[in-house]
Amino acid sequence: MAKCAICRREVDGESAPILEMSGYGYTRVLCDECSAELDTATLGTDAEKIAEAMDSIGKKMTATDADPHTFETVDGILQSAMERAKAIKAGEYDFSLDEENNPEDFEEIPEELRESEEDIALDKAEEEKAEKVNRFLDYVSLGVIVGIVIFVVWKLVDIFILK
Image 1 (cartoon, rainbow, N blue to C red):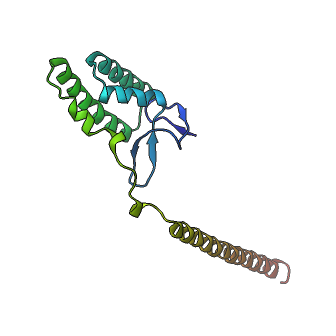
Image 2 (image 1 turned 90 degrees about the vertical axis):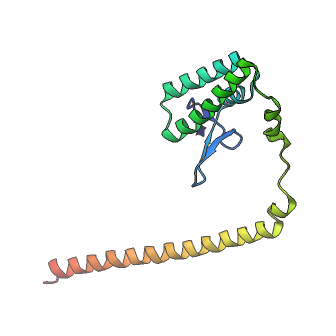
Image 3 (image 1 turned 30 degrees about the horizontal axis):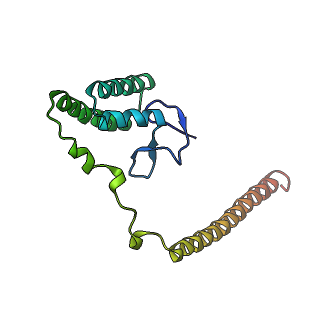
């Protein structure tokens, strides 16, 4: 089970919202509560609720001693949320900016970028070939180890028993 990057609560890693992804493909995920608080902090319309969400996230991160990458990411998010809350409180924020960045407006993956049946079959064939090669190399490695052990035992017998 994966853990929430902010509060360290266990979450289902496959369906959990993703906070960030490393260059190696490792994801840092969020629990539903922390995700909702980040949504409130970044998309809320009430400055007081935004401040409460930011405060709650900050307390959780302090209590769990979040890793540096998560801290940097969340700190950047909270900095922009704080500026947004100040603009909302001053009555200067343009809420049409939120509509432009709404992830629900993004289109599905275009057909030409989707993985085709041929690609899936090719990937499966490559995996099977790699597994056969790995199995062969395992047998070769085992043979080499057995050969070394037999050689060492033969040398010990030759030195101590046959002399």
